[in-house]
Length: 128
Image 1 (cartoon, rainbow, N blue to C red):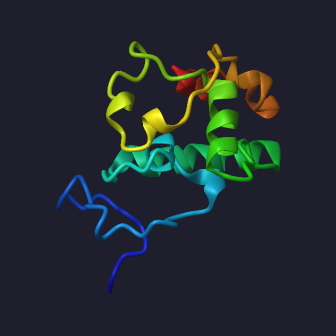
Image 2: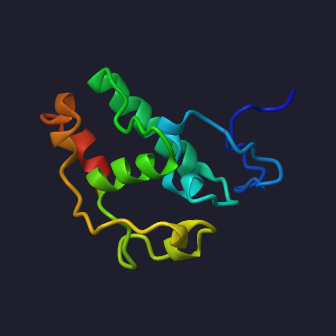
């Protein structure tokens, strides 16, 4: 049976874009790499989605309910900060990274947007 999700079974770390469907998951859960049209799919992409599902369970609402790719990226950067050479050195190599410019935004504490996590230091440590 074909697997609908990329699950690491020790086979391959990456799935080529020729295999990966374009609309892999709901926009709300797509990682920035996929939003910038990356052709690499690895465990980090799945972990991103899992983190957003956890945030939604805590908030009872999606953390980044974007209405399109640019809106989604803007919402992500509004919380996590705009990518820089320091915090995401390889972002400039993503296929669509240079197609959009975002104003410089600093990250904000996750506890300010995931209110039920504000007292849980283990959850808040995930931001680091």
